[in-house]
Image (cartoon, rainbow, N blue to C red; front, side, top):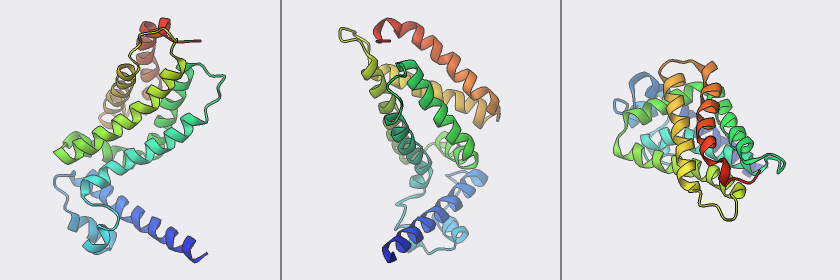
Length: 200
């Protein structure tokens, strides 16, 4: 019971630091935010913050890491009765649901990514590779045995489309109602080209 309380306290502290960072990133941007300012807003010492995050860029990357963890578990539990396209759409819709549900953090993360910096780029590249891996696994399951479909390339395209639509309709214009329809319409274009490679 004591261990559970300690773990819960640790999680709450991490969340407090994360929320402070995301609030400042949304207001000032990552480049203009210091770790000291995050500490002050979270009400913690610099020593404490390093128990949870090694840099402010790690805070930016946490949103994507959390999303990927949820999506990986979601994808693994999809019914086998769904075909490849239905599984990919289901994961995309779950991703959008998570973004809408945590819209403040999602916007702060997108702002941090768009501002860049080498560390943010490295962390975000890893997040996008991990996300693409979820789609690649789905595509591999549905691929015909003799197909020459490049599943890694298609997975990368799906992720690229997803972030393009997020930037266009969520981060810059806040047109959340267009997210699902735009992504599905874009996906149709990809699937028109790969249908002959997938088992249905």
